[in-house]
Image 1: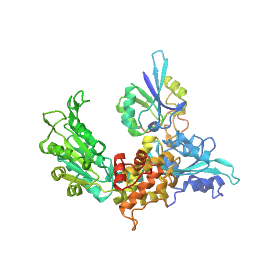
Image 2 (image 1 turned 90 degrees about the horizontal axis):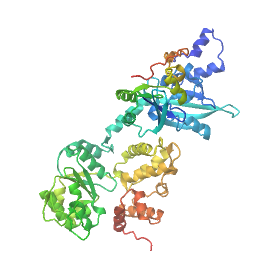
Image 3 (image 1 turned 180 degrees about the vertical axis):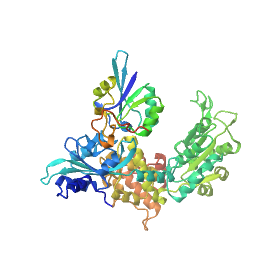
Image 4 (image 1 turned 90 degrees about the vertical axis):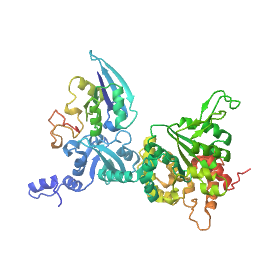
Length: 130
Length: 459
């Protein structure tokens, strides 16, 4: 399985639409990882979707992402975990443990009760989902 | 009516106790229509007003204490943060256009400004950012731009808009087209637009600059040659007509072709056939011809330098492209277009041009037309390290005192062109290819200009 993360240095990139780098993590059945860092060739939607498809990415974990990008990526059959923040290693580890939806990885404004500001919630609001 | 802030409500509940300084600040910030937030030296948000909540979709309670980039979610946060720039240089940034992703996943275009936050003793406390949602203005601007553009050609000049209206009809026909216009007016771009709108769009578009090829080479270049046609012709070589088969050939600078070639081209147009060099057999072609010239072909016909029968064959439909000095209203649109283009190519984020620089560009006469304007902006991009192209980023020749105005009553256009060209040549130490590049014209056009204006290079 291939998981792609849009990254900025050692952290998740805040805005996927403007991100330059994609970390591709191949996770095998023994949960061993092989990491490859690539650059996005283009800022446009179609180009980025094609690049994800070329890399045979199954899952995309990213920061803030616009609806247009989300729709295009989903229609390519790629599952998205959007509006995620934090150090890349922590995010990968949380994903492997099934904790990626924990509030600590949610960008502000994306908790379950978002605007009402329920800090106790461990669930993220469905931020930007079309 | 003014909507009461949270601090005001809290004060009423407390039976009109006096405002604290913090409450006063909150009320003031909430009454501002622009989004405002402040950060400390670690980029953590210390205050966040109501408009900022509305624009970003992030509640104040959630925003305060967070890194500003996580709350604002702007495209520039990681690579060219305005607050970081202001904290580093002490200089404010004004009205930089960026986009953010709000909590609903919508892209909003905002205009941001930043400034340092200091106490009354001048001690640095952090920085403040104000921002305005300009998505509606931006959408309107795009709609207006779309109205004034056609297949990459941008103009709101009435002659050009009329051209936009008829271009699809011109493209749909199979007729030969003649495009007249000075160098740099976009003749090839119009030819490409016609090809791309035509039923031949999936076939090749082949451009040939007839003026750039020596007379002896032009025939073999256009029609190709057979092996043995001349000493070095070891094997057959297809010409440009063959390469453009079923598509469009664009013959630029048609006014410069020699009379021997004019006869051959006439046959190509009349009989739809040509003969490769060294061949005894005619080849039929299915190529649409678009010719262009920066000269007045009718004048050349009158002077006996261009065949009248060829002129009438070419001049089935004539398009006149006005020079840039006759469509000055397009300069702001074109500047914006070039800024967007160079931002994308050079990965920069220049927001615009200062009004002073714009006025200078509006008074220039552009002998090199749109290509010259594009080169001026490209040059400014090299020098510009800030958000706006300023006067200092423009070529010296354009600045007041150095500017050559064509509206001078005492000089003829020829005198003005001559004087301007001389200035640019001197600036480039008489390096003609470099001068041609600066003017945005082909070097062969420059050579002809030098000759026709009688400019003598130094010995």
